[in-house]
View 1 (tube, helix red, strand yellow):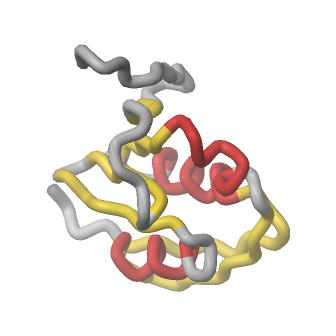
View 2: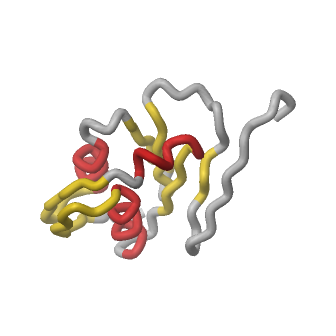
View 3: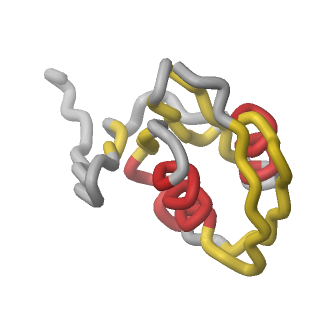
Length: 105
């Protein structure tokens, strides 16, 4: 996978918009737990110049109570205290799949 560097200056945009920017400028795909929809719609301002994905994500999620894990080209975002209460929402070509995990899953 290429060593992607990101540059953008976004003011008062939802976190999910930053995810969109990253997806458009790279091969990364985002996934998140279905119960963090409120958090990823909170507005932030972020200015980065030639920053690697690790640093960009640290800045994006700073103070949100959310963390991320990179699995090759997929970036999974979840609450720090989350214990698999929900399956991840997977974004690919603007499709979202949200499902609750049942006792037999």
